[in-house]
Amino acid sequence: MSTQLSHPAPRPLATKLTAAHRTKLRARLQKELEEALSSQAQLRSDIAIALESRRGVGTDEAEDPEGSSLAFEQAQANAMLGQSQRHASEISAALARIDAGTYGSCSTCSRPIAVGRLDARPSTAFCIACAS
Image (spheres, rainbow, N blue to C red):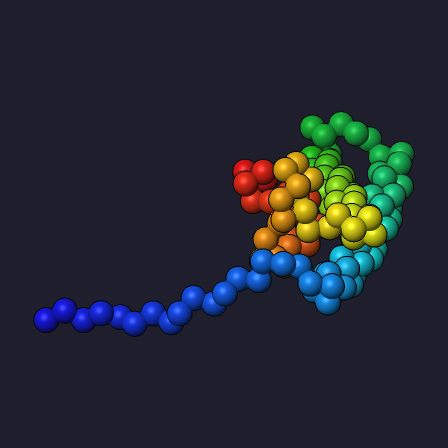
């Protein structure tokens, strides 16, 4: 006795980026850019406060049990700042592509980037084949 499971018909994939969808993605990118810039400002402030609090404090980690923890936290904050800066740069580049009319086309091969990929990563400049 064999039972076959019925699968719903696959949803058709949107293949062309519409003007309305582009507008929606632009708004999302602008919001993400604002959030990234805000995050960077907070991280810079946190880093400055941490540096100021360590001013005049000995840096001999063998004698300072908090020294290695503070150094780790500083390195982590710097890494997060760098990541946020790269993300903001990617977003700015995507907004520039929207303005130039090239958004949604792969920067490497010029083929269209799948709308689903743009929904997942609106700042991407590459189709899935070129990103691999």
